[in-house]
Image (tube, rainbow, N blue to C red; front, top):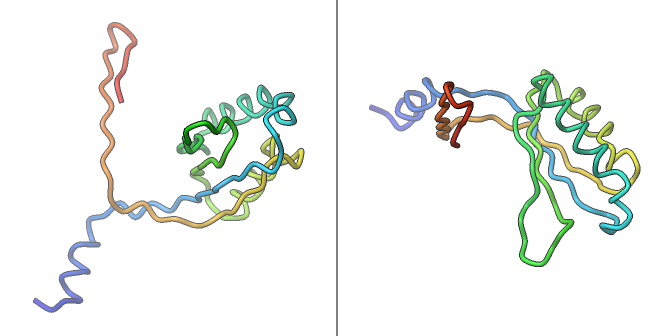
Length: 123
């Protein structure tokens, strides 16, 4: 088997889901952002409810309350991802900036345990 054939065989069954990844960067202090945090959270929850937000959250750094964050959008085009990020309240008010990239999910594992009888879950 050739090297190229082996690679093609390995790629063939992969999900290859196109997503868009935004890395956001704080450009203002926490005190400047506090006024818009509730609006930010409501906006992100709405994106999630619409099925456009795949995952999002901050990078955790010891002693840093407001740092960089990661948002993964499940939308059709990079233009739609751009519009979604530009409408995010902290970005819209000039308190954060972002870099956006097209990304393809190929590998990974997600396990969720749902206990319907108790409405509990474990990630």
